[in-house]
View (spheres, rainbow, N blue to C red):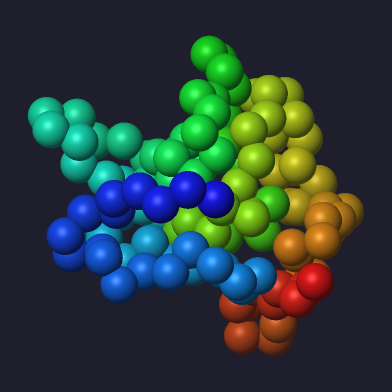
Length: 116
């Protein structure tokens, strides 16, 4: 994983480890957002592109495999087609979602993550 700038307020964030790393900046609709000049971009998309060195293919989306919209851990982010992303979201809602980064929800509604 390459080093990149998250911004002056976010310098202390370490994008390592297997647990979720919640975006500490601004949010919109439950997702972290990052100001880039005059534009605001999804924080998870920015982190995915910067950490992998790959652009998200046109029309694709960055999925949170942990199902935590605030998470910016690159290990939990994956570029997928809109159809795959929608299927994963429905599987999650129906209780059928399975991924190594997601174990389920505790009684208090918080996500439980599997540590590889």
